[in-house]
Length: 149
Image (cartoon, rainbow, N blue to C red; front, side, top):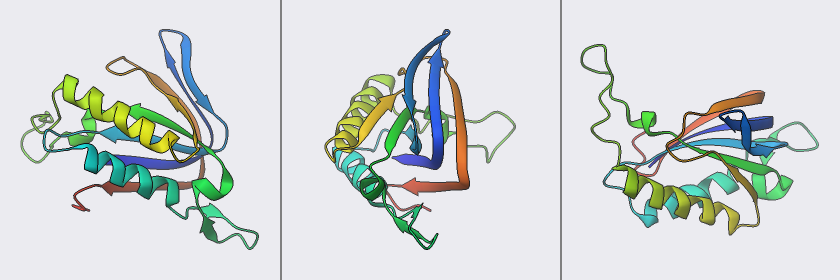
């Protein structure tokens, strides 16, 4: 399971002109699922992300977590995180999970983040979405449950 985590001042997702999710300060999480992933991967990433010390403390050092700041999490499913661009010019998505499995683990991940007491907003699974954000920093991190990077 992969995640792109961006520290944001605010973010929202719109589907067909309707806002499906919005947060103030916190993190925007793009989440990709592969066929090999399990609930263990989702739990690992949920715990890792809510505890990442990426928010500034009183001395402006990245020393506080999402839990410390009580920020929100906007979680958006994004199968393209498993796009393989090594061959040719068109990405291969062969490693992306089948939509049924991906949705199950996406929802499990959402519950895992919320279980930490974090306010969670989401996109709409398998929908074309417009994502707007004000990146704070900018701070953008790549995480992988298999620790591939």
